[in-house]
Length: 144
Image 1: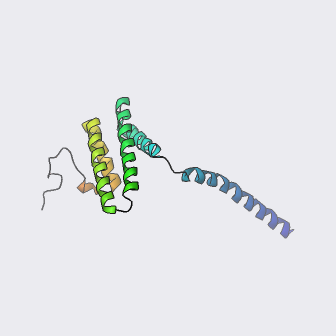
Image 2 (image 1 turned 135 degrees about the vertical axis):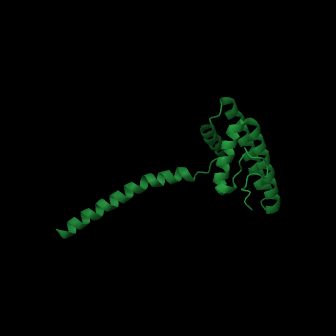
Image 3 (image 1 turned 90 degrees about the horizontal axis):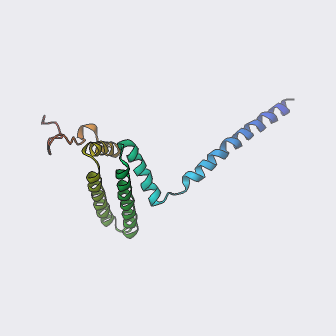
């Protein structure tokens, strides 16, 4: 009797474990498939469209900016994979160009919101974040 109860519990546990792993394995398989440059750029664009409430025209222009920037970054990674210094220089140029293009197509309020979220994601401490309403050099407390 004890053996049959133990066997039934063991079977139930094993069946539950197998059932629970099947969806997890399926999800892991789809999550591990690397996204294309265009898919990653489109994901970034979708988040920005949602968070910044962009117009359809802004969304289309931003999609082009993000796709081009991601494409150039991918090309730079391939071209300069053995030269970290050159890669860093190229990535900085790509980043600055993208930021300039984004600034040109967003309203001032949208860009301020974008910049704030960007600094937050980059881990910039709240006290050191830029405040566009203040002039240059006035973004830090003058209590020195």
